[in-house]
Image (cartoon, rainbow, N blue to C red):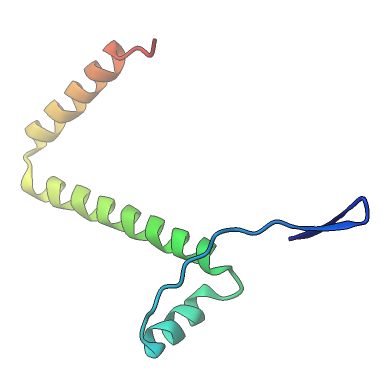
Length: 87
């Protein structure tokens, strides 16, 4: 960003880092990235992966645990939240 302030040009610079990746990886990511800035895109990608891993873990638990165990977990969670008070 460049601003004109009292006839003085002020440039606000962010700190940047370079990440080396194979050319083919960059081409693939650029297609998905579209018009977004690289930083914005990489944060979005990270958040998507976290969300999908959480959903996958939840599905695994549902398959592993019995209905009774799931109900006990839900009951315990509700009791914890009732007793939890921020000070």
